[in-house]
Image 1: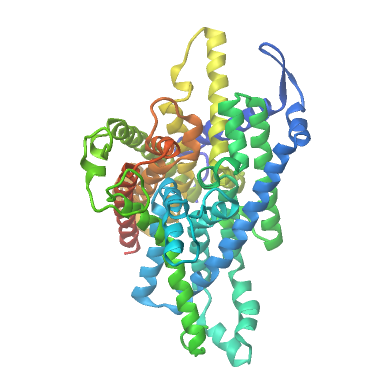
Image 2: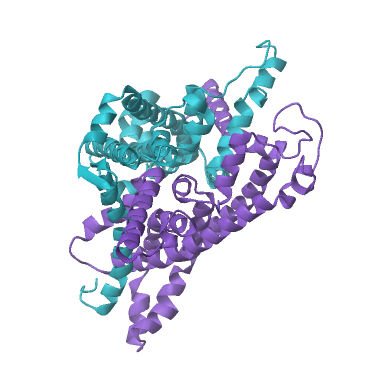
Length: 285
Length: 285
């Protein structure tokens, strides 16, 4: 390691500081500043908590907030449940070519724009869509069924969109578990479920935590999926932020919402890291 | 639960069926999007009216094909323009960041690295509005203090580029930093021993070693920029990039032209994804 006094060091530090300060740190402090002010006369502002109190007194706002949080947690849990067996299969049951093929196949859909993937679900789920027609053809329903614009559709979209971010950390962590340890567990008489519970899952914990954190953040901050699959009543908090900023032009309230969303995600991520005794840096890399 | 431990056949087949179902879930939306691009109907839904290439090539205003839709083509140009600048900027800053964190020890290094990761955990919508607020207050200040109207600080291409650059740099830094960490320092030391200058070592040893990672990160950056929606939505104005144009069309009610655009997008991003996988394969050699 070099000593940090050389000219080269300062040359490297400059773009980093400019980037982080101008595009990340200062904008967020500006947002906090706007969230904590109130217009008292034209072009006159004063410090106030009015925007935050408005959030707590207007049921629509905090219900949307709670709903977004609960649905994101649910989406994270579902993604984990669906992804774990698949990741285990890829990491432990397969070898060589089939393994890399299935793993790649898992990744490829996520190189496609989120908009295209959501559009695909719209074609599948809508009243005139593929699934509705298939159900009619099978004789399970008598007329067209609308599967779009409800919470289940939002949930499918969220789980689908974040699948990759669960599968990759899980496969990575499961690959590092030696087969010998699993065999040893069986040799000592453990059943499949005991081995799962006492060997595999504790070993996979770092991957589970990092996958869950990323999926949760992505669901919380998602805009496209609730908007397109949930329709008018999707009530997602990011939509509320968009409405305040672009439609109502109430930047003060919109900023307060932004801060609240950031606080919520930080608290939940912090809890996740504390419970699993990890750090943000170890989770992300 | 590894191949060397036998399981009942029923369990094995259930497991395989589950994996199969998972992959159907994964590819179904993409397959329907691609298929309906060729449906000879005004709506991207069943019934199937036969095969047509109209949604790519027709110039009829009723059923405009992609290649004649000037608004759509223009937005592809806008997206490419944005992605080019985002990629160049973020690869440059990511490379300097990688040297900063992998080659130097300085005070608060751990803390600054954590700050560097921040853009990954900030929802895209919030990153967008915070930059919008910051640049807007800067523009207002310039207007009031110097009577200057600074056009680029208002929503538009420059802000979209800055917003995407803000978080894509973090991802690129992680890719390039990981490569630099693996480098064998004795290669550089050998060059120094042979009398090479610092710039000569950088140019002939270190940067060539980093090239595959820079290429891979560049492809990822380009795709992420091209497909970004959340941050872009808050910062864009009249020159809308492709994802925003597609989103607006989708809400108006879509024709299979949108499927045709999506299919082209899938082909291009699929090819780029494979290219980046090969770039990483080469890196391992």
